[in-house]
Structures are given as C-alpha cells and as structure tokens.
Length: 345
Image 1 (cartoon, rainbow, N blue to C red):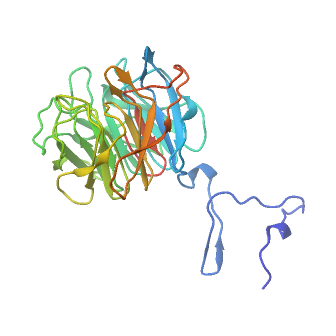
Image 2: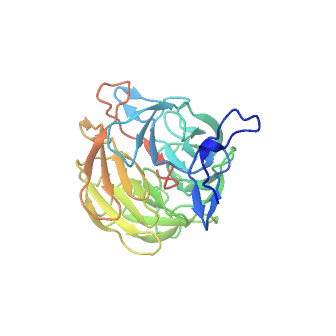
Image 3: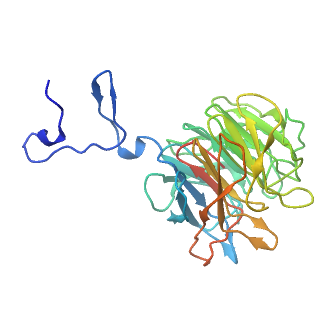
C-alpha cells in the first residue's frame, strides 16, 4: 500500500491540493477527516472578558487571552453598549454575555469565540437585571439571580447554539436556606452536568447547584470555608470548582477555595490570589483557572492571575489587562468565559 501524501492529491481539475483544517485523527488505520465549519470543531483555549467599569466610566470592550500561555490581554471587539455587572457563559464555539448596568438590561449578546469582532444580538433575559452570574455546559447556558433594583432569585436558561429569548429554569435559594435578598453579586462555575453559584447578596457562605440538563430550583451543596462573601469569581475544570476573591463583611479577600463538583460538601482552601480584591472576572480551561482585574479600595487592578486547577497553591502572575480607554487597563465588575470549559462566569 502506498503512503497517503498531500502532494499527490489534487482537485478534479488537477490544479489545487487539499487543505486540512482542524483536529484530525487516525483510528484503526483509517484516516478520519474533520467535518463541518472550522469554528465548530472545538475550543482553542481562549478566554474573553466583557465590559466592566474602567474609571471614569463603563466600557463595552471585549478583551481576550490564550489560557495556555501567559501575556497581556488583547482587544477582541465590542459589546453593543457600555455596561458593567454582566453575566457570561460559553460553549466551545460561542461566548454569551447577558444583562448588566446601566439600565438594568435584559439584552443577551453572543460572539464567535474563534474569530474577533463585535457582539451580535441573541435575545433577551426573562427580565432586565444586573449583578447576575452565568455558567453552563457546551449546550445550555444558565444565568443566576441579579437585581433590578430589588434582588431576585430567578434562574434563566438558553440553548447556546441558537438565538432567542431566555426561558425560566427555576429559583435560587429555595432548598439552600437563603432569603430572597441573597441572589445577586455571586460567583459561578460548572462541570459538564452541574452549575454552581456561591456567595452573593449581603454576603453568604452558601454554595448551591443545579443539574444543567433539567429544570428546577437550586439545591444546597455546602459552604465556603472562609465564611460569608460577595463578589467572588469562579472557574473550574471538569471536576473541580474554584472560587477566588470577593468581599467579606470586613474586608476584601485573596482566598481561593476548591470543591469537587460531583459530590456534596464544604469547600476547602486552595491558595491565594496575588492581591486581595473584589469584583474580578474569571475563566478557565480544563487545566488552568485565571482571574482578571478587580478592586480593593481605592485601587482598581489590571492584573491577571492563574493557577493550575489540579494542584493547590497560590496564584501566579499571568499578565495584564490592556483596555484601550485607560493606559493601565484597570477594570472591575465584569464577567469572563472560555471556549474550553464551557461556561464560566
């Protein structure tokens, strides 16, 4: 049998050779050619951070990093309008950004993760809100809580591959002993089957979860180990969830906590961020978690930290945000997601 060579294959006119794009595999001696558009062949390890407050005003800029490397963020494109306090989720192909302030807003926008450019209209949340958080898996995105201005316990969901308005999933807090005023300003992350929200409101230590493929109210998972907190940011591998940063009743924190998403129980200490800060954004691949920006009065940060999710330890410097509106890129109260893990907020 002769070797398969790309220099001895042409089109039917004998003029052009083939182009192999995407991930190809060889199984049992058979060559498997990738199919479908390039942008639908899986994530590349890209994270995006959308909107936020960059003194002296909100921004609509979307910034991107490659999670497997280190370095500064770069411009990806723009949201339709300036906004902060959004929630984000993603599949391997699309990033989705919902809600936000000023407004509040019911707008849901999406971007194609493999390209760069502005966001496109997706649909609307079940109601206008800000201070929500997003999560999900490669199929379904979910958005937890928010306020307008009263706090609400709504969970919305979307099918990421389509466009259209969000639908009601269930309610937060019902089975976790939470009052109705503890359902905004939380952190979130997800496994392929479960999505989690933790912290939030007037500060709480509660971790609650849903099963993404079903609909229904959230369930109690356990507690954060550091006590009550609001404004943390979460990320995850397929098995381990992380919560980083936030604001306790007395000060901003740099604590990173970990929990195994397939089980129930309390979080345990993982390590520390490089600085104490609240209102950062987070995203992850299956191996690395990253936190960007944040605030520790009177300082707004441009720093990006990263950890290796499988091994506990303190975060390491990744690079800096570089939003164009301010020379040092410092930003807070924004949201992140990635095309690998499938939905971090």
